[in-house]
Image (cartoon, rainbow, N blue to C red):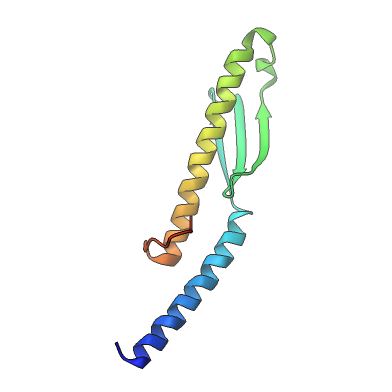
Length: 105
């Protein structure tokens, strides 16, 4: 590999690193929304896996329904996490061209 090719590759890697750093900042602002139980529980989460919003329909606040509410919350959180991971991976793939780089999303 010639010196010119090495320089070109280094510039491409530096550009990719800058794009990755920018994306990681943007992922904090990107959100996904998931719901469970036909929409009676809704969760909005950042693509950095931070819950931003949680809505629970008042009809679920019957103490006799506590177990169901807990199950629905778990389902909504898990779905939001899965969606956030998928979105983060898709955004990263746009930058890396699907090349796997250790330590990244």
